[in-house]
Length: 84
Image (tube, rainbow, N blue to C red):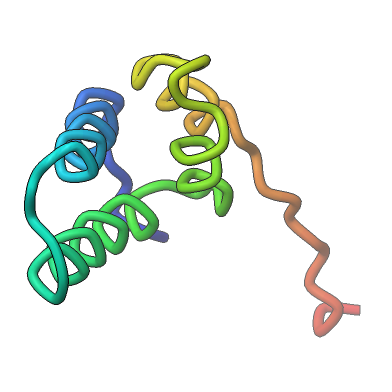
């Protein structure tokens, strides 16, 4: 199982992504920092749509609401066919 982030950690990463997007950093440095933040966020939550919520739902959703939505996600667990 993944090492999952807490709600507070998710909110902090979302805020950091938002701050980075508003910063004056450009080019390769921006890309590296953004990729690092995305990677930490995507590997720390089960919801595969977490970054979509940030870019498609903000500012309508707050970082707290995005974190709650991501934490509410329940993956579909298929039965293990090898046990039949």
